[in-house]
Image 1 (cartoon, rainbow, N blue to C red):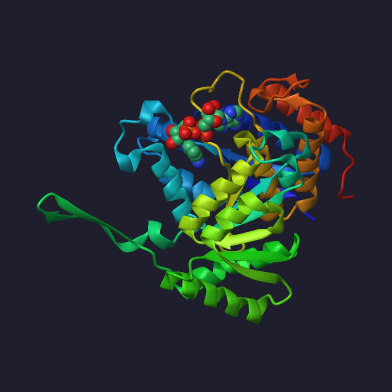
Image 2 (cartoon, protein in one colour):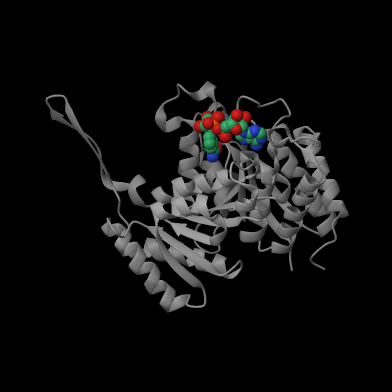
Length: 369
Ligand code: NAD
């Protein structure tokens, strides 16, 4: 199999550069040890792009992203851009990138590594071995529905309106992603909405059920109200495999699930569009301006996001697994950046964490021949 790929690398702002430097080490390792050949286009996004191009995502950057096999991003934002116009703020660059790349499915794994089980606020017996994947619809629903706005009603009264709206094709395409992913995991999908009180939720439930009978009856499907899901995530999270839900509930449930793991510096994400189009891979955390440039950032969320790119966009699941196992080995060996430091462990810098991971990879046996 050819292992030639084009990647666009967007470190972004704050700790994005430090974390991406460690991804670069993994990229070099894959080239030297696993026969990959990457063409890399590095560019700016967010505040860095605003400073360089006058906008948080330049057209030429977007074009590079669209022509790549995958886009690997750091994170954007920082106090120095707080007073920039709303549509030129760092976050606007990210929103435009997601929109223009047609990324409708956001994948947020919540995995509890054995070595970090104590970092969760839940009891170890509840979260040990946890491995959930939340698939959130990303381009529709109440964040985009029309009409929206704030209306002046006079007499000091105003009305704020947002519209929750979904069409069948939007529900089907994200549900299809969830069923496909479940087949590669534990074969179970939980679909969440509020069908009891929202027509859009009733449609969601009916369309997911119809797609399931038509295309995915081999996968176990359960429907759950989103508020119940929020409770179940804390009560018995191990019951879940893949959760698929809309934009608003997904926003909330994925943050809740993320916190079951207790460590922001460990959480990767992927955003996918139509099959064959490039995906966007980024850590869940922000640009952490409070620690930027100090060598304190945990680069593992960005490295694990790159592993997701290998699995979902480059079809190199074996190498993704190899990286994930090396992360586990490094953590088991007690190597920790300050954010995940624990008694008896060895505190290291961002760059030393990257080096430890490469050492872990060197000790691993190739899964693929
Ligand atoms: P944040 O995620 O940047 O930081 C929250 C806390 O977690 C901070 O104390 C930070 O030091 C720590 N932290 C985050 N990532 C870490 C890592 N990898 N290693 C060690 N510690 C880590 O959230 P925030 O402080 O609310 O936001 C900072 C900036 O990031 C803001 O401008 C915000 O808009 C932006 N942001 C961007 C994204 C994104 O690019 N997708 C996401 C969230 C926030």
